Image (cartoon, rainbow, N blue to C red; front, side, top):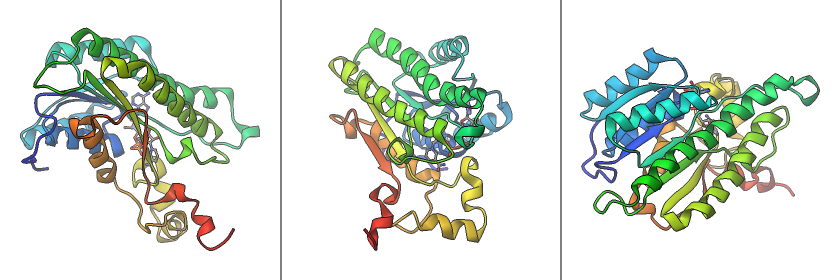
Length: 271
Ligand code: NAD
């Protein structure tokens, strides 16, 4: 990791949920390199979260690990209280934590359905609510950011593309899409911007089976017109832009970062 010369987030405070691996880890590091002090949330995985914090500090950045299950209201509240006590406020929330529990509809248990909805959708609601309470309390501070706050929801191409065998996950991301747009509409008058990133296939632990063998990767590439599997840095760059004043006037969008996966690649030669 190396500090950037251009630090569009200098002096700001960010929280990234699910930041001890994959996309969240990449986003946390990138926000720190862009100048933000970063809360690295993890669901009781202190070793990996502390490693992310150490890397950020070694590169000259500021970070702290924060344990909380994003689906648990009390834990979310106390995580925000800890962050605000340490860094004074919050400017940027990246609601990234998410997981899959895949099954065909007829085999899916109610517990699997509720677990995924609770982490992926309710978790984003709880974190967005706490962040917004602080954004509204503090308001716009000249010289800090022209916005009172920025929320970035980690959605998926599956807010748009149906996904057989993953109805709980697709429903959670479809829910994130309309929650994000509703919050963007509600909060724009307060100068709070709310957007989503819709990653395509990104190499992380969540989808290891889809890319770890050459055969699996060849199959996956059939769905990606740009012909490469994404990496967390692809998402991290988009997150820095959406968090910065460079994207001021952008609110209520999903920025798909997917190598063209949402372009119906099956129609390139058919239809
Ligand atoms: P990942 O498994 O590496 O990261 C998910 C993170 O969420 C983990 O660090 C995990 O510990 C954390 N987490 C899980 N439950 C939590 C909870 N209750 N509270 C707090 N944290 C919790 O996978 P990833 O690919 O980095 O996923 C990050 C986000 O990106 C998810 O929302 C996922 O749906 C989304 N996404 C990923 C891809 C992809 O191809 N990798 C594509 C589209 C969307």
